[in-house]
Length: 162
Length: 193
Image (cartoon, rainbow over all chains, first blue to last red; front, side, top):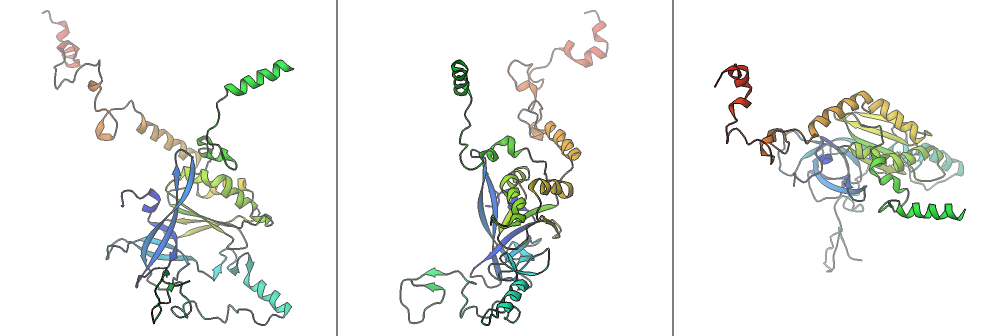
């Protein structure tokens, strides 16, 4: 498998997005890369999953991280470790201004506009607790979901029966 | 006038057709175009990230958008081992990040810059200089010359003796004495046989 990997994926650092997985102490990171089609002379996107250790335990699914190849692999499957988080899902920080950002608007600007309109029930980013509080009870993005067909007495919240 | 029109049609029919040139701006998919970028990133740059917004009304992102549309395939073609990632509609301002081997990053704020300006800036900061590129081109030419011998170094043929019509290898058939430089230089040519 390692022989057929394109040259990009053999780099010491890679950028990828954390993807839901069932692993307990590691993260699955999906790395996008482009392959060149010789005939069409165009690039097509492909992704490759890597299993990485996160020593700080701060990364959650959806975060964009940089993973670095481990010098010594203690486990066969864990090949990389998370070296830096580029963007956190939900708390994207614009690196140029350093401000928190929602889409193409700055959070503080949005809050000011809300204040002027007198908005009351809006989500308050500063007062909200850190992400991960409702994992397993209301937030089911940490592990992969699947379609389930049988009605059990105790339904697994990660099985969807719609 | 008719004659000249007919001539034109004739000329058009004889012209080579560009195959598979379908889609928006297919010029981007020609080898000549892909090779035309001056940006060859320095070895320490491993990841290039472009952040921009797709909304047409955000004029300050136009340069970044054009860069991604016109120049990114060129950059990837010249740098096949650099991971290039685009992020759309994440932040209000466009920027390009280069992540280096030692985990540091270089940020380029490209707000309201045209794609040409962005390209020039990148070449100046993280691109290999023209002289270095010319040196590398010369060095690689010597490596890829099919007229070279030596299988050990990766060329196709080990010796000219394996080509039909050439003198057979002296391992198999000894070379006539008077063809050898040793014989010539040791003065045997002056001997009377």
